[in-house]
Every structure is written in C-alpha cells, then in structure tokens.
Image (cartoon, rainbow, N blue to C red; front, side, top):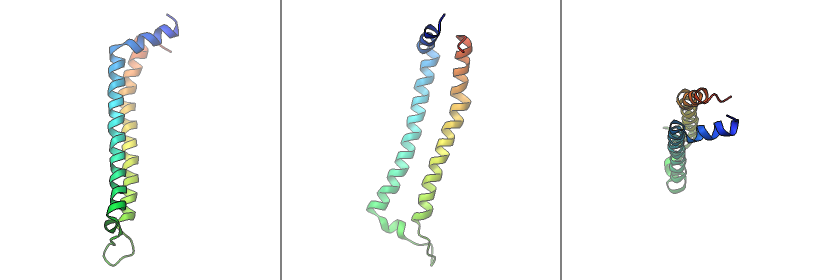
Amino acid sequence: MDIQQQEHAIIQDQHFQAMVRSRNRFAWLLSASVLIIYFIFIAIASFKPEILAQTFGDRVLTVGLPLAALVIIVSWLITGIYIYITNRHFDQIKLRLKKEYHYE
C-alpha cells in the first residue's frame, strides 16, 4: 500500500473522522470563548468606559488595567488548555491510527 492509499484509508476511517469533528468543535468552542471575552472587554471600553476608569480607592491604578491583563492571561490559559487536551487526547488517537495503518 503506497502513501496515498494509506492517507486515503486513514481519512476514510470512522475514528479519524470522529476525532477531526471533535477537535474542530473543541477548537471552535475555545476560539469563541476568547472572542466573547475580548468583545465584552471592548464593549465595556466603548459603551461604559467609566467602569474601566474607576480607581481602586485613592490609588492611581484604574480597574481597566488589571482587567485588560486578565483578558490576556485568560487567553493564554485557554491556549494552554487547547494544547494540553490536543496533546493528551487527539494526538493519542492519531498515533493509534498511524500504527493501525502502518503509516510512517
């Protein structure tokens, strides 16, 4: 069996197709989460900037700066979650399929 036939067989495999659908749903869910977080932050900055302009007591630091940092940190965490889950779950399925089809 040549490489093109192996690739075609893997692509047609039910487990591979289920893994691709599951991975895509997972990626879209996390991407939507990040976008929602960013859009909420931008909406607050655009329509209610006084919320972000509030200071912590009598300090100079406003609420907006730590909130912006939190948005970035949460985005990094969501990226880390994606990497962890794909490495632990989806890559294992790919390895199993590669062994099954003697690919590489």
